[in-house]
Length: 135
Ligand SMILES: [Fe+2]
Ligand SMILES: [Fe+2]
Image: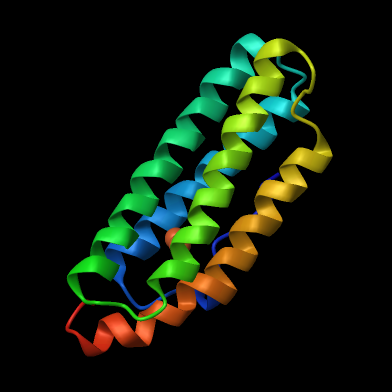
């Protein structure tokens, strides 16, 4: 069963970004399924790495839009992206070294982070970028 499901309330009003958020949701669900299936770290790590690199490229797309359109809340938003990237990098290190595993707690953290980041942080740029012609 999907841990997180796309809902229209997640839409930031920009097609490319919504599509990327849908991909992130798919990857979190894929990781959750692998975790629930009791897959070893050999199988979890590639899925986690794929999620991490997709996050990095997604953040870069958002940050490029901010730079292009002089988004006033760029600094705060970048700070949140940097903190998430650092957390996921740390998690990969812990899973690799065997110090930690992908657990229900980790999955809930990822799910809640995405929900909160989209709803409270990403949604703020929607109207601003729409007003600059980004749809
Ligand atoms: Fe985003
Ligand atoms: Fe973001």
